[in-house]
Image 1: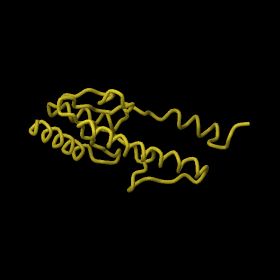
Image 2 (image 1 turned 120 degrees about the horizontal axis):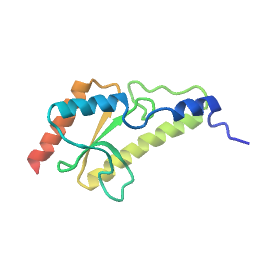
Image 3 (image 1 turned 60 degrees about the vertical axis):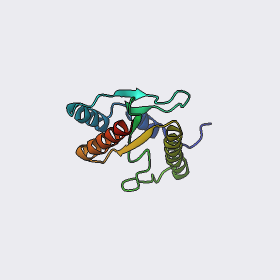
Image 4 (image 1 turned 30 degrees about the vertical axis):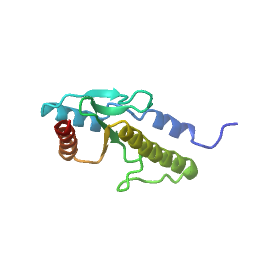
Length: 140
């Protein structure tokens, strides 16, 4: 007997959601590249920390994460599903907790995490990332 976590229909739909190279992530990468910024994609910034950043600026030690509003519980756009509420609340709250832990572990290793919400304007996100990388490069 299967638990009532999700129905087969929901499970199939959710399994088709992209977790990397999303439209938002690709737009951000294209815009960063267009202004001359070079980076690595889908890398673990710190050995021993099983977290993969979407965009990594190694020498500056900046890790960029593009977070989906639903999956990461955006305070502005998150919605709570009506079906299987306990399951989804635990899942999303777990993602939030993992994001905070990731940021803390990277900070302990001397890295800066930059979180970009999927709803952010690409220009604004590019400016935040560029500023963070430039500040880190300037301070050595």
